[in-house]
Structures are given as structure tokens and as C-alpha cells.
Image 1 (tube, rainbow, N blue to C red):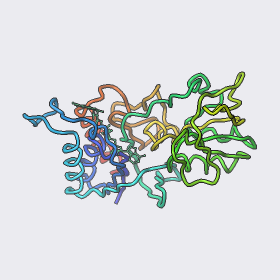
Image 2 (cartoon, rainbow, N blue to C red):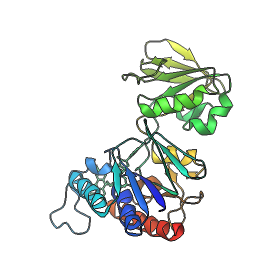
Image 3 (tube, helix red, strand yellow):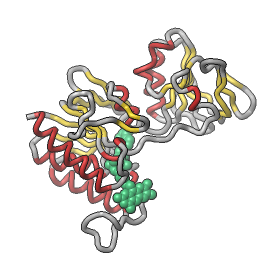
Image 4 (cartoon, helix red, strand yellow):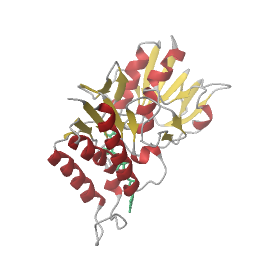
Amino acid sequence: MKKVIIIGGGPAGISASLYTVRGNVETTIFTQGGSALIKAEKIENYYGFPDGVSGQELYQRGIESAKKLGAKVIEKEVIGVGYDGSFVVNTEDDIYKADALVIANGANRTTPRIKNIKSYEGRGVSYCAVCDAFFYRNKSVCVIGDGEYAVHEAKILEKVADNVVILSDGKKGPDYENVIDKKIASIEGDEVVERVIFEDGSSIETSGIFVAIGVAGGVDLARKLGAIINGNYISVDENMMTNVPNLYAIGDCTGGLLQVSKAVYDGAKAGIEIVKRLK
Ligand SMILES: Cc1cc2nc3c(=O)[nH]c(=O)nc-3n(C[C@H](O)[C@H](O)[C@H](O)COP(=O)(O)OP(=O)(O)OC[C@H]3O[C@@H](n4cnc5c(N)ncnc54)[C@H](O)[C@@H]3O)c2cc1C
């Protein structure tokens, strides 16, 4: 039986699963519980709810409908993806494989509010360890983040860099041997990143800064697989497939109308297409 993994249990991911399960494709959904819906107190512009519906209820109903049809829903954070002939999805403890992968994990996070960070993008500030680690061979690098995703990125960098430090920017650091938990004030350097300055006036010399805050966003994951990114969004064709065969992106992570109705449409389109292609 062919397999699909859907990263995201919001309206886009659930909608895709309703088509893939019914099309006899083994479907696994990962959700971290953080759908944008949870923040929506009341949704009054979605089909079928004359009195409106709370975002929380719509999210729960979505998860239930996918489970009822036979999708497997795993409440775990995806921290990495790869390809070895199949798509590979990593959580903290496990590896999962599939013939098709759907990125449906919502709008990407914004860049952290750290002075100068934007201006050093491409000049020492990166959002993808697996893409850019090579440029930091035998150098010292930092990862900004405080969760499992930051640790995952640090471990990729350890293989090439001389020294890797996680900067948790004033938050409690993750379980990693080299963490600085001071609040970051700014990033400095001439042409490229040279150091991070902390609010207490101290600093650390570094050649590279990898941003891995919170959980891995859709763009972060797509980039690791070589998908084309346009600004903050993943580029897809009319069937919601990226430039990488059998890698799809749907919902808020592809931009356009950031609404439930558009996410549901994207999911349906991708689900139908996956069934067609995998058969
Ligand atoms: C305050 C607010 C009010 C809104 N009001 C409305 C409204 O009235 N009407 C309307 O149509 N839309 C509204 N929206 C927008 C709507 O919620 C989104 O457009 C919609 O939820 C997008 O669906 P999605 O499936 O693309 O992403 P999301 O619903 O954000 O779902 C993303 C999924 O990915 C999962 N995820 C993320 N990262 C990972 C990871 N690394 N590993 C595993 N799982 C992961 C999350 O847990 C979640 O299940 C509102 C949004 C907000 C924030």
C-alpha cells in the first residue's frame, strides 16, 4: 500500500487526508496542536455554521473526521525531513517514511526581533542547517532556538563546524551541552556575521547564525528538500505540488488567502492529485 505523510492537522492537512484515505493511500498526519484555528475565537465565514464555530471546535472536529475515516494522527513535533528514495520524516524519537509528503503546517514564523538579523540573511544568518552547514566547515556557529528543532539543527552542524552553541535568547535552554540563555541584543560584523551581542554587554564570536525558533515551519521543512521558496511561502503548481516530485504544500504555508476555505481547497486538490499519482 502506498503511503503519504501529512505534516499538519489544520484544515489543509485534514482536508487532504479525507481524499487520500478514501483513495486507499495509507495516511499519517502529524500535528503539534498549534493550528492557527486555536487562536480564532469564532469563525463566522465558513460554510455550514449559521451561528459561527470556535476555531478550537473546528480543529477538533477536523482531527476526529480524519481519524474516523482511518487516518493515523500522531501528536508529535516533526523536527526534520529528508529523502533517501522515500520521504523521511523525523520526530525526536522516530523515523517515518512515505511515498509522498504534504507540508501543511501553517504560516511560517516571522524572523525573530533581533537587531540586524534581517540585514545579515545570506551573509551569515541562515534558516536551514542541512542546506548551509557546508559553508561553516571548521568554524564556530550558533543556533537561535529553545526547543527540539534547535537541537536537531545543532546536531547537523556539529558534523562540520568546530563549535556549536545554542542561544536560547532569554528562554530556558533545551537539553544540549552548549547553551547560552542570555537575551540577545544584536548581531554585528562588517560584511558578514562576526559576533552576537547580549543584553548584558557580553558577546560571542561566531561565523554563522542558524535560526530554529519554536517548531520547524513549512518553509523550513520545504527548503531542506530543495523546494522553491518565494518570500515566506512555498511555491506550488496548480495541483499543489512543489518543484520536487511528490512533495506537496497546502494551506497557509503557500500564501494567498489565509483562510480556512482556501486551506480546505488546497487540501482537496493535493489529496486528489496524490491518489492519482501514487496509483
Ligand atoms: C486569530 C485568528 C483568527 C482567524 N479567523 C479566521 C476566520 O474567521 N475565518 C477563516 O477562514 N480563517 C481565519 N483564520 C485563519 C485560519 O485559521 C487559517 O487560514 C487556517 O487555519 C490555515 O490552515 P492550515 O491547515 O494551513 O494551517 P493551520 O491551521 O495553522 O495548521 C497547521 C498545523 O500544522 C501543525 N504543525 C506545525 N508545525 C509542526 C511541526 N513541526 N510538526 C508537527 N506539526 C506541526 C500544527 O499543529 C497544526 O496542526 C484565523 C487565524 C487566526 C490566527
